[in-house]
Length: 229
Image (cartoon, rainbow, N blue to C red):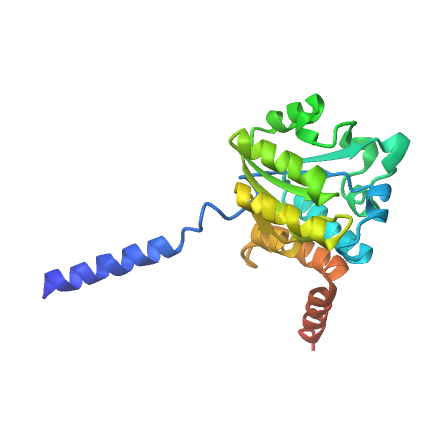
């Protein structure tokens, strides 16, 4: 009987201990880097698979999340002075151009740009999260290239955009088939927070959601107000 009881305790302890270990496939503040690609005016003009207002809000969620959790982040642009124009204010709010060393390039595939590739390599992370415009060109290129070089790749589907829904959807399919992992902007933020008991980032996270999280943000605002009464 004692042996049976001891075995049961050990089994329960093992089960409990196992339940506390999150999957290594989950993103956390130390296991990846973020590359934000070509969030620029000209690229946004032609984006049709998602409304520009929602795209901008989702971009802010991603940029804000990376800043809150100190994610190593690179912001790239393409032909900023001659064609694509300035970076979205939802990016520069968290990464001011004057201090963030945006990497401008001419290549559509940022992986083929020596400065971008060098900057990515210097971060020392083998997991990369991508977001940007357009999905079928400027996201597919580095996603497939990084996978080929042995990186694990995630891409934020609702913080990416393309000239049509078809173009975006086929790009998503192509990346998934190659082994990349699709996530969303809110999922990215909440996966980093993970536990509301993490008080050091709780306020910044909920403030970001209230500002850019749509209906969920209004819900948080409502709940906080009601708890005062």
